[in-house]
Image (cartoon, rainbow, N blue to C red):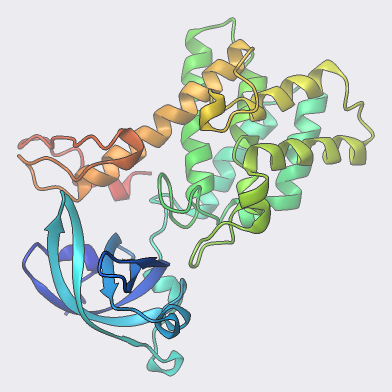
Length: 326
């Protein structure tokens, strides 16, 4: 008999289930006491829950990356699903559970992601761009192909960073084929490097948090620094136009300063990179919400889309097998 997963439960159903704590924050409550805002996950996805009247000892006990046996009931609060927690206990490492069983992965195998991205690197014929992209993939590849693309928003799954990159490269190829004035090689290089700084910004796959470098500097500046270091290591002129263009691609890909961009996009390819990045992140976030929505109903609010809710049509079956896309 298959074990039910976290998102297999519906509102009103009680559960007794082993899950992974993805995030935990100790916060003050209105009555002057404290509570733990927890995000639980397994291979099906993520759902939040509040552990009321928490102590500092509870905060030390229930930390990200910890397995717990959760007893509670799924319900809805302010248009968001959550778990009403009855009780929790730590799961001992000798109980036979493996952490990797509780981490959702991208729907495409890691080896396929590697092959697709390496094929696009081979298409970058500009010697400076190719050398830097290849150098940084060699340097950070192990983390790049396994890390999530975010802590909680889009592609926040194992292999999510590479999955996001691969998807963007597909969009970039289609757009560059439609608009011959686009420098396809620069766009490919930007797609591959734009979020690579997240291998430094984020702590890893299990219990993902922001590192000190992530909080203080951020992935745009971190990858810009990596490009300079790579150029120096490779004996390239870091002030030549090729390198400046590549640096501009990564520092401008968030589009606006209020969203973290160090510069607005001033290149056609940089503007496209920003649009492709936003498009892929939006489609992922909306799809993720719709997958957890019954046909004929609206999804929960999607934070990254101005807290809008999205409708899942009754007879649209395209979402049914999305996890099996290759």
